[in-house]
Length: 411
Picture (cartoon, rainbow, N blue to C red):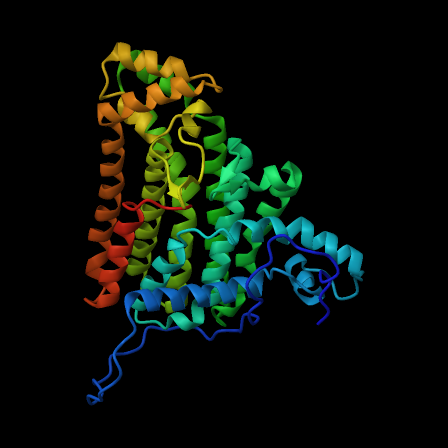
C-alpha cells in the first residue's frame, strides 16, 4: 500500500494505523451452559489495566477506519471511490486534508469516550462477546467527533478539548464537510455486524432514523428557544420552555446513543421488550449527558490546568439551556426577567455572563438540572433491569450510565 502523505510533514501524526476491520459473525446471546470445573488462574487485570486495554483496542479500530496517514486504499474506502476512478497522489493528499485531518486532529485530543464503554457493558450484559464490536464502537466515536466539529461551527465555539476548534484551524467549509463525512463511518461497519438481511435492514433503519433525529435536534438548537423563554419570564410558567429544551436534547444527543444500543440489541438478537428498554436507556443516558453539559458550560471543565472551552459560552450566545429554563421556577420574576434580558441578545460581556452564572448557581438551577439528569437515567434503568439477568456486567452498565452524567468530563 502506498502512503500518499509521506511526502509532506504533518503537525499531529497519529499513534498507529492499526489493522483493518474484520467481518464479524452475528453475535448471539449464548444459551446457559454448566459451569466449568474450577481451574486456578492468574490474578485478573486491574480496572485501570482493563480500561487501558480497552482504550488501546478502540484506538486501533479508529486508526483502521480513519488512519492518521491514510494510503490510497484507505482513502478509496473512506470516499467510496469507484474502482475505475483514478486517485493521483496529489489528489489523495488533498482528500486527506479535506476529510481526515480535521477529524483526526480532534480525536487525538482524547475525550471521555464513554459511549464505547457503555455499549461494551451492554454487549456483556446481554451475554455477547465484545470482541466482535470493535469496529462499531470506533465508528460511533468517529461519528460523535464529526458531530462535535459541526456543533462548534453552529455554536460559534472557538475551543474544543483545550485547543482551537476545527473550524478555527481548518476553516468553516472544510470543518463542516469533514464533520458531516465522519457520520458515515458507521455505514461502513454495519454490514459486518450481521449476515442476516432482515437484521441488516433493521440496523440501517436505526442508523438513518438517528441521523434524522439528531439533525432535527440540532435544528431546534440553532433556532433557539428565545420566544419560549420570553413567555416563561412573562408568565412564570417554566413548563413550555423546559419541554422545548428537553426535546432538543433528546433528539440531538439522546438519539445517537439510542441508535448505538439498538445496534447492539439487533446484533445480539434480543427480544422486543429488551430491545426497547435498552434503547430507551441509551437515549436517557445521552439526553442526561447533554443536560449536564449545559451545567458544565456554567462551571467549566479544566484539563492540565487549562479550560477546555470558554465558560458561559451558551449564555454569551444567548442560548436557552436547562439551568436557565429551571431558573424560571426558582428565581423571583423580576430577577429572572433582568437576568434573561441581560443575556438574551448574543454578545453579552464577560462581566454580565459572570453575574448571570452567579445568579443561576445561587438559585439552585444547576442542582435542579443535575437532579433531572440523574432521574432520567434511574427511571430508564428501573425499566431495563428486570429484562437483564443479574450479573457484574449489568451492574457495570448501570454504574457507567450514572457515572456518565455525574463526572466532570471532556466531550
